[in-house]
Image (cartoon, rainbow, N blue to C red; front, side, top):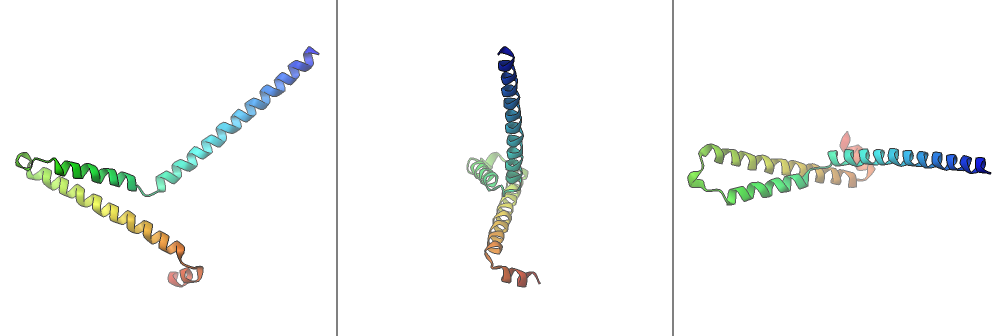
Length: 111
């Protein structure tokens, strides 16, 4: 009787180890999938945070005690953020518009 209980315990332990291993593998695959999707998603949130930071810096900037180099640098950062935001916004809206086209129009526009 004791031998049967030990055998059942070993089977249960093996089954639990296999289930734990399966959960770890599936969790790793899901994490990889989410990470890849986040890497290729447009970084609108990052651009918005950067714009808020630069605007806050411009608002609190004391121009009397700031050199021209710093002002030119802030202007370049602001222009770069604006261009980046425009490019990401245009690329996303262009992708959505292309996906909404019927298949016949897509094949005609590719030729």
